[in-house]
Image 1 (cartoon, chains in turn orange, purple):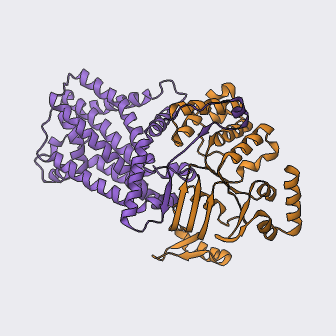
Image 2: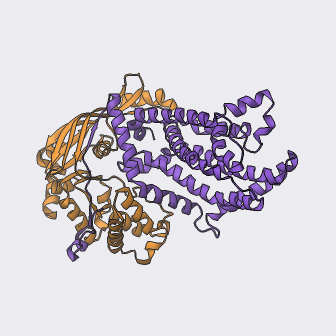
Image 3: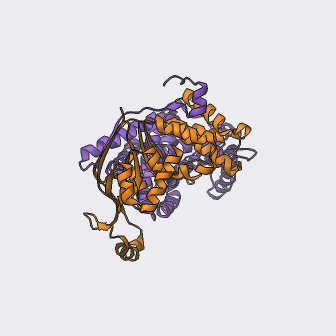
Length: 260
Length: 298
């Protein structure tokens, strides 16, 4: 039984570096009103403010919101990477956060070495790493290239390797940023199928995307983030109807129906 | 370790095979020292559990530096040998010392000093250079400091060959009492981890620290008895300060002294342990205090 509880969580980034105290301060403050001061009167960007929600097995949550609304920061917080300055996070179950495509892949190392490292980062044992290597090699169809440094790969091969690695380890709680759908059109059927299996296999899915039809298709709950706060929390239909313009909403509904 | 997961054709077509389970995590914005201490010790314990990762990362680091070169990591050995050979003959002339005693001293000192100085300079960047990993996956932070220590122990292992060569050539035979270098080196490893953590934190927060550390280490190299023998200063006033209260000297001496058959001055171990205790306390204190902030700073 996987669960994720976010209880009154706040995150703020300190701005330490020199000129940020003067120039950026005035600019940011004018633009967003999200600069604050902490107890010691240091300048901070309030990335998340008093976020509370909880997820249980079966929940499929989508985040929508403009750039800089705090979606990626919230994903990182839910993965336990950023520890909050206020509030509490409880994670029950294994978490994988797919936040960027390369995820620490090292171009100088061979494909096989990169797979091994990824396995070790996830705390896998030798037998599991061997299985991981077999699985990724088969899926990414790299053949002999597996023994060559990743920087010698074609762009397509790097994408295949990154995707195969990201989707090889099945977590109970899956946190995804939208990059994974970026090349959606160009993905082979195989890749789309693999991603969908992973998504349906995860007990809890959290997805951050600008694409409304993907959210409609995959999510049963949507949170609209704005300025580091939850603006709206509800079913995809009600939140998206408020978030999108009527034409966009109709288009997204049609798109989701078409795909389903 | 779990058993190999069963793989069916359906698995292959559909998706990844590895499922992962881990213990539950609860992160509270810890305001009390007790909560912070608990999180920091979990970090340390989890670091040891990730030993295979630390070892592989360090191994790949060394391999990458020399990938494509003919001699590979043995360039480490060779360049150290050339340096010690050249300096040894030059300085034994300049200082009018016997090369049979000077060369073993110099080889040991330089190799050990290299270890210290590389450790401090790479320790400075242990967190900042792991930025993508720290921001990509939740894992114990001490892993990154331990990686610096293990990597430098691997480099040291390549350079020890030069010391062995010099000792053989000069017929220097370490006394049986040299086994005390084992606890001494264990202390070095603990100190190495502590200095990496401490400098790593400091440099993640204040970006001006690495050049400052580099210049301090440069000065420390000249004022510590690394290329000159401590016996030169024995009867001069200044020498007492440079030798007696120099943390680098005490730490060098507990490894170097027994191997060269020099009796350790009374209190050398005490001074080495004292400075280590201060260093470890500083590292522990700062890590417990700011561990959750490191991800924000890098």
